[in-house]
Length: 310
Image 1 (cartoon, rainbow, N blue to C red):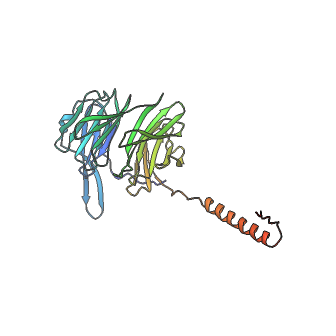
Image 2 (tube, rainbow, N blue to C red):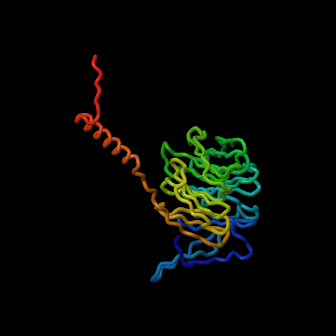
Image 3 (cartoon, rainbow, N blue to C red):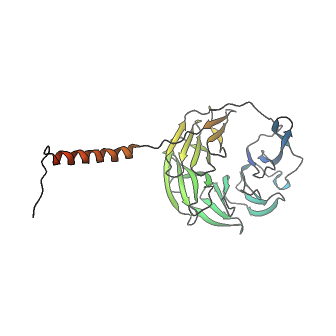
């Protein structure tokens, strides 16, 4: 675990920040408040020591004023689209920075819990009550509904960051037995597999930039690192936080994980590389040694060597 001093602070008055999304091009960040969304600019001071701060912007996001609590915010990779999902189930996609509406769905879900764009920006996934929905961004229409199994409850969603034929969609689910991760094909939108990874409810989820790792945060404050390939848990940090985990973010090199919690702490965990087991190699060597020993003993009359003649 790493510790750091606070480098910047920006007050929001009586408004309690709920969710935020950082613009990938470095423009600033958007933050959802109880009734509206506010824009913040980066405050970069290039003196002897480069410092990065945050300041409230004079820019007003008119379409997101007095619209109620927005539970999900995300930009596409290019920073040209902004998707927002509200507590009342409304889903909207805006062209950034003009804030022109591209998709406006009043009843996408009873309540929108999470959103994520595909790496190429062609698709948007939304999670809420009921099925998970896939949206074609260019056509502004829903193209698929991913159905739950039995008593599943969908939680959070992330596309794999690599845009190739092996691209998949990861969704967290909850059942009585605990939290699971499911993998879905992005061509057929069919479920590939599901695996239970934790007992406690999942309250935060993310994927590493290299696509190899998944991170899960629980209501008990635990943080788990999971292999995206086989969904095996690689590392568990018990009680990483005193309260439920609210957000997770990998470093750009995928070697560190930042986690934040309602305990008002931010923690950075260095990810240990998975040690590859040499067990299979030793088994092969052992079998070869046994075979050589048996052959030697048989040829020297130590063991009887029977040959069947025809």
